[in-house]
Length: 76
Image (cartoon, rainbow, N blue to C red):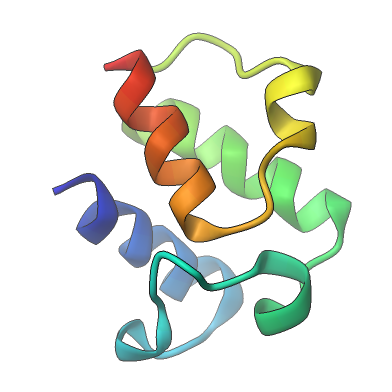
């Protein structure tokens, strides 16, 4: 469920096809994201999943979709 919701955000945010997203999809290498893109996405993640603010240390460890899924799962 977390992965599916996150995929929806990624599709909207990066304009990619949902079936191209896996747990190993890398934000920079595969989605051509920059740090601002990742921060913007994480703000949307906080809102969608009703999470407290994600701190900079956690953001530094976000490189793949799986990293975000794990981060969300740890907080809900």
